[in-house]
Image (cartoon, rainbow, N blue to C red; front, side, top):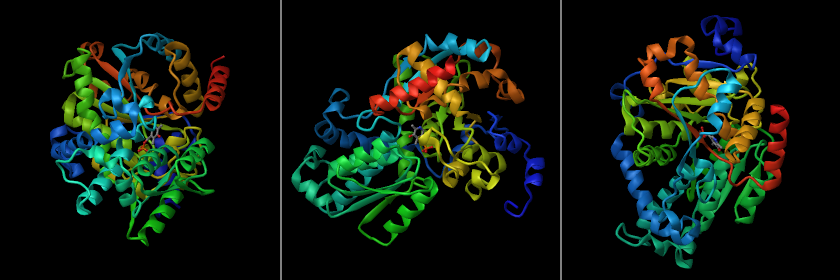
Length: 448
Ligand SMILES: *Cc1c(COP(=O)(O)O)cnc(C)c1O
């Protein structure tokens, strides 16, 4: 029994659950999608909230450029570039046996400074916000100061009185840990069993306390939350519910808009933009999608990608049960090589806030992510971690006209010819060379 009903009755009511349980690659286009003008209010957030987050990141730029010299070139702004996928495009058409129209691009969050993954957006933003709140209240800082003054022993001693804790499959812990430790916070990262050893080692080398669990992500988060609750000096970064994380991610929308304009790429009703976002708990893709909707309105179509073993957001939105169910409730094991996506229960906040703004959801097998990892390296010379490849098949899935998606969304063949498709590559740059070689070897073997 699952929430009082038999598995059989769930499957009768929601037939795609059968495919999910069988670990088949599945695509679901969301019939509940609504115009942005109607759906935006579901989030309880507005463009003013995103502008506030963006302004805060601008204030911290003066600090980041001195504390992390790798951000000097971007004047302390943590941003990634976009890159055309000219070589990969024809190989995907061949692989999926489909003609694939439109232009294919990649967003290189894999190469974001400081922590080499999409978590360098939300995770770092939440630490900076907490630092600002404390520093303003403690008289260490005013809003008009040059924030470079935070790169000092005095500031580190001040932040050393406070703690930050987070539960993570790896990358969020890396962002929170590296940023928090640099400011001087006492940081504890609660890591799930699937987190890679090198991430734990790296965090410890930064002076971060790493607590390891034999269970999955949800347990690591719950344990972290519990420990933090009993300690008033501790701020818990709640990956399942945090509005701050969400807003940190959302800033990407306006930034991408500038980048596309600079590349002379139009986005409007006749030139739609499709964005493929790998999804774990949902905070990162949800926040980015929110920012994209604010920036491009109904001209942007956001699609989430999950591993076949961890389809928590698809399951939650499709059934409307959100965080009331986990994939494990349906006998799906949540074991995947895509460690950033190994989440069995989706964020209830993101699912409910974003369900009318997301065009679709699909799952990808681990084998496919590894194969695409090798194909990406072979064609474009880019090295990404398995999770970051989940967005690639989206380019083909939307064009297969399954469930009448394109027709229903009012996307004409003409508009599809003019479309831009953007794969959000969420991580990879920090993976050690020997780990990457092992990923590549596995992928090349699968490619044959
Ligand atoms: C965390 C992560 C994601 C997904 O972010 P969520 O907020 O968990 O949905 C995607 N890719 C990588 C590499 C990640 O680390």
